[in-house]
Amino acid sequence: MIIGIDGRVLQEGEGGVFVYAKNVLKHLIPLAKKHKIKIFLNQYKKSDSRLIDELSRNQNVRLYKYRFPNKFLNASLKFAKWPNIDYLIGGSDVIFFPSMMYSALSGNTKSVLTMHDVSFEIFPECFTARQRAWHKIMNPKQLCERSNKIIAVSESTRQDVARMYNIDKKKIKTIHSGIDKVFHPIHDSITLKRIKNKYSLPEGKYIIQAGTIEPRKNHIATVEAFSKWALDYTTEVSGWRLLFVGHKGWKTGKLKQAMRRSLFSDRIHIINNASLIDMPVLYSLSQISVYPSLYEGFGFPPLESMACGTPVIASGNSSLGEIVGDAGLLVNPYRIDELVFTIRSLANNDALSKSFSARALSRVSLFDWERCAQNTLKVIESV
Image (cartoon, rainbow, N blue to C red; front, side, top):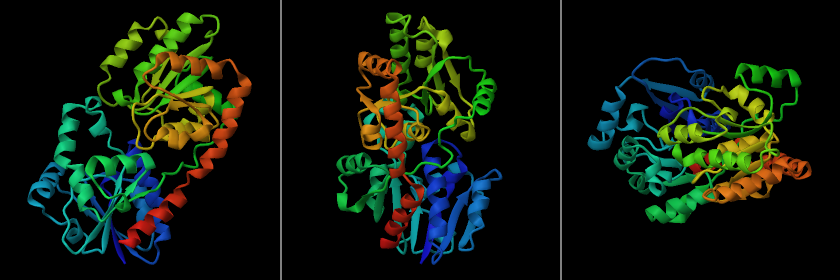
């Protein structure tokens, strides 16, 4: 069988969708040795990619690189339905899209699409006008209708896609994402100190929230909960600090205002440029990981925290309860008092904290990229 793969997302290099595409393809391609793999790429400005070079070293892989201006290609694919991507790669039996992308296919090729979430439908106010326009033109409902099979990264996403787009649930397969092996507890004191110095982090106990800085992640609630805790329990909160780690996204103005207004702004730190290799250390440096997101299709940061043995507090909505299970504490992200109570529960009870740390390390074994790739390949072969 000839499997085409839309590799354009591999050229973006950040965010949960990139993490998914990178890991699922690194594991899927070696499993598909009996198939020919053709990867479609398009980038107007040339740039090197270790990941793409690594994938191309598999004997069954051939790259098809184009240098169309992206806006021109997207407009042509959307409105002219041309050029057909399967023709650009010399023909294929099926094309796998690891995420939503502008595309056009001939009638000779089947397609499999991974849907990561429908947050843009449920919380449009959390996106910029440009992002909302992009999703409207993209027309996710039409993409789902045209796909022969859909992969959902969580059962929550499967239910949302079926409900919102009136898609037969039999067409959608839930396949949980995995966790990168780089995430594990770091105990080496020299390494911990080196990373503290690298990011100029003062001594203290840390509450970490990782993930893109954008409204849906609800960082403001974390600031308000930390401030309320510090104000109401001054002695208890002595030595504790709040750490946000994630690249700068959009609509960050209100968060900056909330941080400036906080009486404890000197204890709140942001790292926008943390490298992947440093993340396990930053999680391991932290005593608590919070993630009061309003909606997640999967949610990598809580899982990464769990893999590092950091007790997790997450929203009990969308996919997060499904991912965290009984290995973390779930809260209502709109209830600041509930978030404060839960933080205090972990901060003041070492036995409880250690219990959730142990549960977390046990639960992450359920999320494996090899298993994800195997199941993804089965779906691709099934069409």
